[in-house]
Length: 269
Image (cartoon, rainbow, N blue to C red; front, side, top):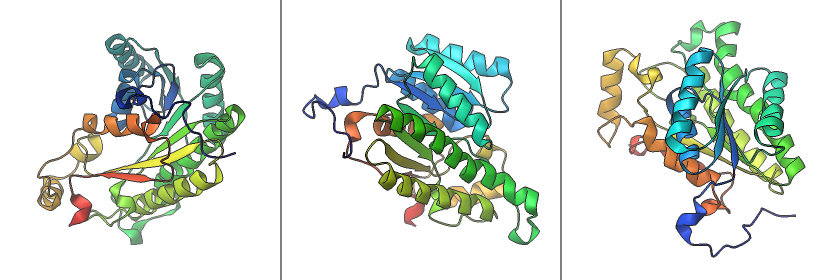
């Protein structure tokens, strides 16, 4: 076998971006980048399972209902814990069987956490917290998705990484976050090679995005970041959704193992 090729590679290019008929699942889908990924995939025609962990159930359902109303697609909510291999595996299997009528085409491993901790002050619990979500959680999500994809013979995994995977952000101190995101990118590359017969695996590495992770930072730290971004502004999470639709679609059917950096030029300076 080889990397899947669309039946008609000469389909008009805009139609190649369509996700009509696809079933997708997004971890960390109720907030920030994840919410916009859910919205973008639904806008492109996919039915989307929004997976959340700590968001109140009613809030998650309201978000899903609003996106479903706006897009005309099915959007359902599933509470899960990506740090538990069993829990996320059971969730994705349930999504495939119940929501997808036996199929799951696209999985976005997006859940992530970050903490400002000097490296000499980490203990087992604080070190484990970031890695459990950002690295282990990606692996357990990927493993569960990969088993479904292999069974189907085709699938698409997208991992939300970070520019922190390829540089060391300043002035904050976040060694665990940086290392976990770098590990997630290399994990994606490893899986892309190992799974080439039945799945594509790619990453998106955002720069500074206007989410709670940014807005809750001290002003002096925010100002420092702004001075370092050639683009001169912070990105809105909605500006990322097109990249996820691209990776989820047949428009990039030969792309696997890639890491798309979207950062307003931040990593260029």
